[in-house]
Image 1 (cartoon, rainbow, N blue to C red):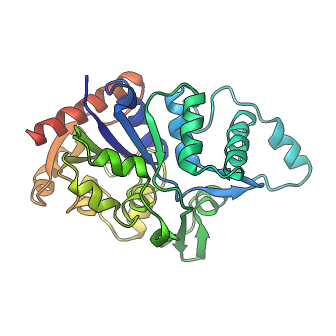
Image 2 (cartoon, helix red, strand yellow):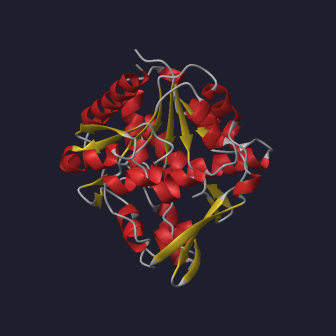
Length: 315
């Protein structure tokens, strides 16, 4: 049994650890804060990839082979769209499409993104509390040598090929932390966990919402992160490529430097054990563990290791 836990999540790596955490934290004691700077409008629909990754993971609907979207998906809509020469660069499966249609309709009725997300979670039978980082729209722009690109254009349409020079989060100053997050951060917590998500485009947008970083630092709980880099490589996604192009150290040490001043502890993989001393020289406590998540057991095991680490720091 566990007390309350806040998780910051984005992308597939985040959703994996969220699923593991749901096996060791009871019900709504788990509050998952999802990055929404990847959200965008496409074909008249509001698409929220990071929220949906968590929804599908916790509802047992995620596709374990592709690593994104729903399992047992069909593609009749995309086939018809392509035959009509419509924009088919962003794949929308038939089941996934239903989620976006319902979300867009509820937003059109005047519901906030937080209210819509709670409704979808309830309808999918999810007990954990899932919230967007904010209700206001925020958009990640990837700055590249080829010019500015919307995140999904960079990530999906351009397949992460352009060389990255920086990031901007449009409308971030007008954003406000989601109210459930602020309320929970004032309560006694076991841990605040930064999932093994891309630090630049999944976690930074959350942390840059005015007042949010301070709310987390003022919470009565240790802040621990799980490194998304193992042995100098990202398990999935462009994090390692981005770090290299930005001139950063592509390693768990590079992740520690990025979060220095915020986190109390960092979980690193056994493959990176030799970096522990340099990370601890930054004032960050290190826990060495098996961080590669390949099945439900390894996801739950890493979640339990993360909570054990946080409780040790609190003690």
